[in-house]
Image 1 (cartoon, helix red, strand yellow):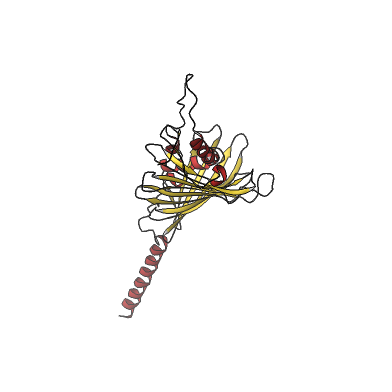
Image 2 (cartoon, rainbow, N blue to C red):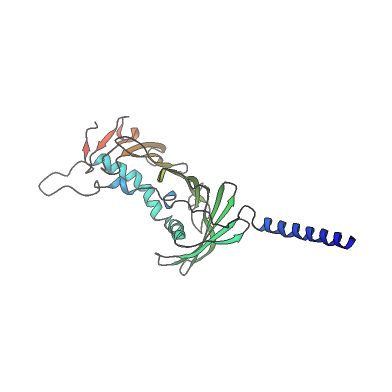
Length: 285
């Protein structure tokens, strides 16, 4: 009887050890399913529907060129941010978008990794994106390595968080391998089936000359709304001429491409200034 009791106790202890081991290995990750990547549009603000037909010329040699000053002013203001996106941030943005074409590998401790090369550039970039599940959020980190001309070792180009349901989050993008410091914060939220609100905030403290970056705290917000103008930009930016921060509000219809702008520092009033679907100035309704 004593021998049977000892064997029974030994079996129970061994069973507890095995159960504890299984629980540790799979804690919070019963099915080991990689978290969903945030939407591609969470990093790239929509600039396409703003231009529409307005950027196309409607003049000919027999007529005076139409006045498009309202739309052109708005386009220049927005274009500053668009240029930054397609130059300084081209590689990290493309690296994130490429992740959607690859599968993640589970690395343990609630961490998954996407690892791949990034196409579309003359130099070769290798990307390593990690996603760590922490509670109801996913912590993201993107590491980039460049080989060839002006090669650089792996560094973290951007990081961020997103809710597990993929409805909101933020990104923090660093400037470059030469200056691996915070440059742009992106806050985003999904409404319905698309990004309903996304905000870029410039947060870099020093420029490349290591002087105070006067553009710091400049911001642009893109969002969707109901009404005759179903999209908007709110811009707050440092103006080199006045040496002050100035603001501008723009609203437009994403399909018809007509819109309006309000910018007191530029127009000298607080009125809306409108353009039609060709980008030509019109009297606001």
